[in-house]
Image (cartoon, rainbow, N blue to C red; front, side, top):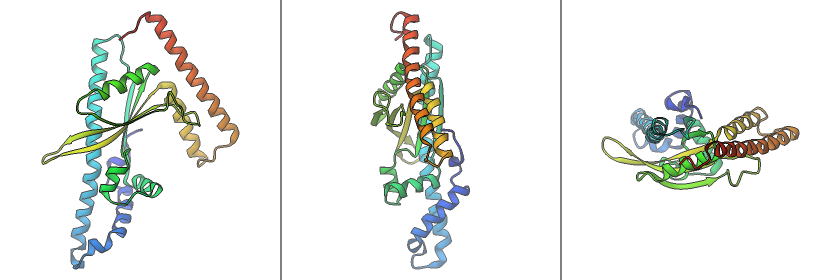
Length: 245
């Protein structure tokens, strides 16, 4: 979930997305006076830039919370439950692809309401119990509104994917108002993250048509990763003897 081209909403991807939105909204942009087209187009581009920036600010707000927890545990506890954190903001091209796939109305208010993974953060932990602990700590913060939690650790996807998915709604304090944006968090162990990374690369390489023998290998690897998480959790409990919390 690395930060990439999505941070440049006016770059190449943004220009392609902008062209598609302009095509959809051409009558409105032209209005009654074609001479104002350029002005209206610039206004639309600013609107799209602000739209993505609000989600980037949402990422920044959540990252601040996560980093505070991480620093607190590093300095005041015997271990930190958070090993690694990364983030990503969907590019406008990727966002429009999802609009098409989901049948969402191609307007910013509809996208804001229906598509809740524009902003994403991934948190990697050493142990399964740490993943649940991180989700619980974030959920208890008073300005974090938990919209949805999907537990793919207790109930893995059919392909073996395991992770905790959490959609939160975060206030973003702007100069003239407060906006609330959705941020998706994926919280998983190192083993889960390794498996998901390989699975993603295979599905990308084979354009989602992964050969059957590799699907079987992935399925077995998911089982092994789950067993590793369980074994490492038992070893930690044995070493500590008591609940570290």
